[in-house]
Image 1 (spheres, rainbow, N blue to C red):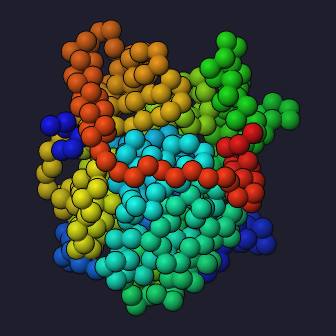
Image 2: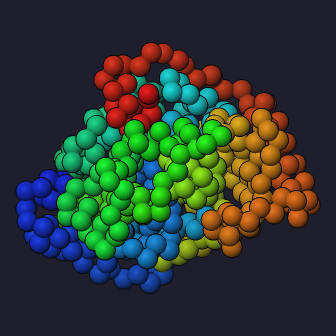
Image 3: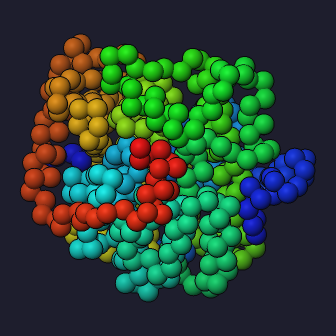
Length: 468
């Protein structure tokens, strides 16, 4: 069978109301709290069973822009500290390069071809079981505080969450509400999802984060700002005969603002973790840092996210848990669909039969699992599919028949295409992909639903650059 089977408030508000010095001092205080813990390998402190689970779902965060994944910029000291305490998965891959299918995969443990959420108006079928529904059925309080857009409850991804807050406005808007919910459920076992678009276009971090990351850079072209509209215009031209491209100084400017957004979110997580400690939740909780996809900055001739290169499909996955061997890094390939069965095993709940991911709880304990390939799929750029193995990955375009092959762990930018030089590897990946297609054809699940967009949600999506 196919291998695959096998703070009390907002830091943004602080940045606007306090002086830059005070805001930075507050952020540094949070970082001291976050980084002072023992980063050495620690054995699991408890056995599987009910306990709080918190997921930080940072939309559009590519792995290599975090310090713990190799970024030399100081983008993520708090997340880095969580990684030192927990388990960092070095090679986690998302199932799709865009939000609707990828987020649906995270919350259902199904590939997009199985759950059917692919287009802009698709809605997850109510017949599909979500992570929150299983937690709720097992007596957990469940709360989702998400940044609107494609995470709006109308798309069906929040099925099973008893509390749903789906307001645009980033962590400034939803962060305090999430914290109040945690205070109300501090003595309970719960599942909490916090999702933010603060790293997504438009790259517009507040001060002092913005200035901190622009310092020393060459200025951008006159009038250039990496707004959702500007970046989407460039992305849409990528398949034309004369695609638009940004000069190097504009790419560097956009990337600096992107990094600044990461640091803003990281500082907010630091203040949130400090509150968890004050409430007595931190030591008994499982914390997850994950993203649905990354972002391209012209490494492959485009921007934003729709291609299946590692810049877009390799995502952070960090799990800090009292059930995990702290201070570990896992070199195994994993998929974001593995998160749901893993969390269910940690809390002692059985995964529904539908799941297509596998639990990696054994890897959290320092044990071995057999090898696994990861599949990613995109309806864009020729209906691409990617298969990621232990050292190589193949990208296949269904429409053109083009095949690319990369040694992705050595060639991080995936610039050296080995497809014509390693036909045996290509043949092996083609066999895996053929098996996967057969598996998807044999999968009998409810089709996604379809409906018109709510005007408010439509406006949110337009502001994010998803609609013309």
